[in-house]
Length: 439
Image (tube, rainbow, N blue to C red; front, side, top):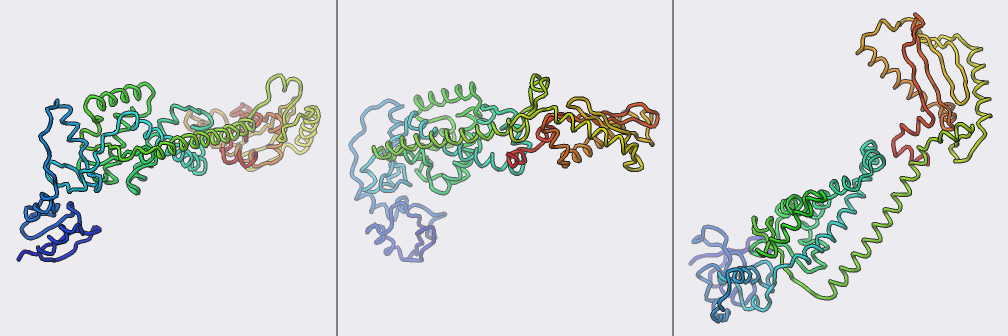
């Protein structure tokens, strides 16, 4: 007697006698689409497809009346929408694999607008989450990228292009875990294969990448309109989008209850207000950053006014007096050897500018070739900038509108380099995270 094995909860059960398996199927202890195997079969097969057990299902399947004469498109639609309601993971009535409970409900393909609003909801939700995660990661670990994308450029089209694939990836992860996404669940639709099985995680990911390319046009404004219009036409004329038709995926309506529709509308409203809240917070943060970087206008400088770190006006006359006093102190202590390669010759205050004069006794301008000169200039600039922005004295005066110069000449008294550190230099060259801490 042939022994049989069957699948239960993704585990192999058996061996059991054929009569026992027959009783399990007849009593519906296991369903008609349970995978079974015996030595007579080459692979695991649905029980309803095994000849030994077809009598169980044939006697419960009512004989259908002759089909009405339909157009080829109508026939295609009928074959596309006959799906099991009791077992949503099975399809294909033509093969006789549906039991009595499977013929009670017919599920229909989702229309273009239902699919569009489900996709809109998911992109809205997952785009918001992706943007928050991406913004946080770049601000903390890649501040230069954050500064470029969110402060300097602030291009909404570029942001959409970046966030769109991120949102689709997050959506694929959610589907792989839950078998659906919030937008599709609330609008009662489900993405399945031709046997109405849930897609594997990587299959859904590849589908989303096809949607990104052929359905959303990579998020590019004009191209996305063209691709969406094309897929809308495919859906209306062929009953499926191009990217679903090629891989035999189906999008079906499984529930059209009013409760889900109400929840969908509430969800959209909540997402809208959450997005507005985050936009308001982001705008306030950007305003603070720009205020921290703000440089006084020419008229303010001309009137000898400057802005302090506390955003209040002070009399620039006091600052100029202090700079003059600093000039006198430096001159009294110079010339002074800083190291074997550098000598401080003096300083000069002129309004809201302050210049240091140095001599490099071991170097002349003619000693450099072009490449060496550029390397030396960059190295010295970096050293000066680091020292400048770690000196509280310099930072204090720079943030009050003072411009500093560092003038270097060689032993032949010919100027080699002259560096300018404009007002608010350290704020201009700070990373976003540093600015936020100062604010």
